[in-house]
Length: 108
Length: 120
Image: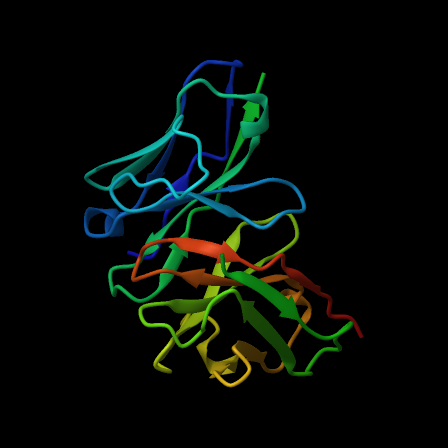
């Protein structure tokens, strides 16, 4: 399969948790990575591998994987977390890099 | 910390060949294990991976663009480049170069992006 599917938008109250999901057959084989993108800026990697955060990413960001679904959770959403979030992985061939369509997170 | 910087053309006309260069600083493009990619984003849309070049020169391209894409590396200048032939309005997008620190490790370094416009 060569698709990763994300919900287009989700809203969360300030300080509450929010989970963003990414579905695709290839996620049964390959981990997803997650990116945060704010308007006019390049994406930033926030989660990669099983559940790894690059240096400088707050620990309120975490990732998980189950079957064909990868999830990004923000525990205690902050105003600065309002952004578009994209998942990324490989297709079944292992070469083609795929991106989900993105989820717009609004912090209320 | 590695930094990437795209440089490219001014406005493009249909049928021209787009040429973009990504300059890498703070690290060697020849260091083992890194995959150097081009990714684009159409206005208001999501991300589309174009292809990568492995530090040893192996390339892989998105099948949807493969017939028009060439990615190459110039280790002497610590740069890698993208050529996209026969551009149309559908190729107008922000083009990013990015580094993957290992197979499927995620793109951990990105350029700031360069906007490519195509108009007759």
